[in-house]
Image (cartoon, rainbow, N blue to C red; front, top):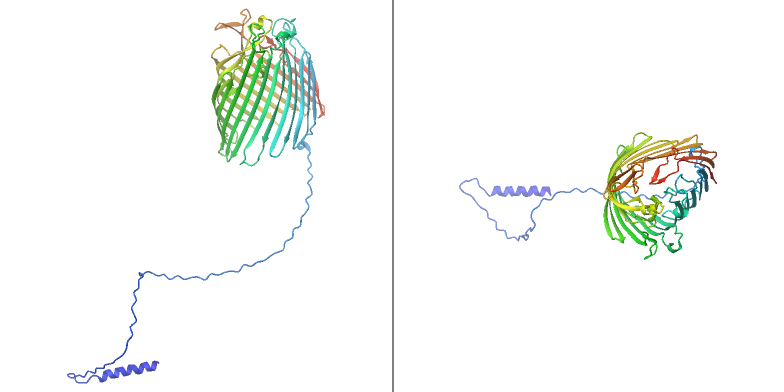
Length: 578
């Protein structure tokens, strides 16, 4: 092929050479007419715009085959031998006994008996009962017979499951007291006798769901019936205090992250009668029929922050009183606490309030010598408080606080002048609105389980609206308590209670230390110092003996006007576990 191309080129050059002559003036032109057919390809238009095409170098995808390998496994179970735990020394759990009996007697004659019986450790069931009796047959010189007796019975039982618990109890109380506050040692006991009998019980159901996304709740239903002694006169035997009380206390709470949402829904209904409508025992003792119901809704939110060092609770109390007078209340409930230096110091501040039902049971618990047809009003209060508590050393704790309360319908007790003329010293219940400032400081010391000491001091200032003083309330108070265990054989304890600044309204201006203010006669009740000391000797783990000295300072102070206490009481006895 290459040779043919060379020959063709040579021929072309030769023909060109032969077409020209050496004579420059003459020339010869050779014309060749060739007839041939040429094919021209049709033209096409490119419609796309020019663009840059980058060259992409593709890499070959390498695939690795999946190697499937199956290994046969075998499981061999090794039996687990139960561990034998031996507990010795101080780590040994103390043995529990089903029963406990305490019996003693004192001078003046005062028998004491207590019985406790319950089941021992159980994951599911709890049950038991207790019976207590204390009475006194001692008299106080120059005064009417001052005997009293108090008998209590209580039985309880319940079931504790993983997600809930159900508890219930029933109780019966029988309390007799004489209104001995008259200077007449020969007074007829029937004319001064007063007795209170109460029968009641409660049932509580509480959920215990561990799931934080579930709502937990506690529902309690309780009630009691209380009445005092009937008059001996058959014509007026309906004139005695008769009270029925029913309450439903319900709590709900739900935790989400660092917040606790809660709500309390409470209902307390009370009905009190004295005599029958339209009847009169005398000119001042008339029939009484009073109903009172309190409903309270208390929602709150509690937030924990700063690694649980800060606790803030914000809530409200919506309360309503229904009965002889319908009234609604709104109370704030705010509590802020902050832990500093790993609980070494905890400052706190807040405001709280609430509505309290004054009924026959609550009033007689404060003063058993009141009349059988007292006046009833609900107490409301708003209290602002601030304080700090903490740890001084590993053995010493302290608390210092101050509060200011605005209280409406605070119950006060004053002597019944009409009853005094009938040789019966009893008290009327009156109410006043007042402001109360309280300052408190406490100090506690504990050395293991051997030594415990507590000291509490309180100061009160009252600003009353209708009375010159807050009758029978102290302006200062101090408490000292101690407990010491020696060689696990001897136990010593000490209690000292002191109060001062108490005033009483009287109706005899000839009494000593009586002053007159705002047209009322006022007597200073003096200082109370009530000291009690006791010792117990443990003969064995099941048998011990005790000696108790009450009011060892032999101070015959007045707890209420014209009601002195026993000068000194010495009681001894034994305790037995079975």
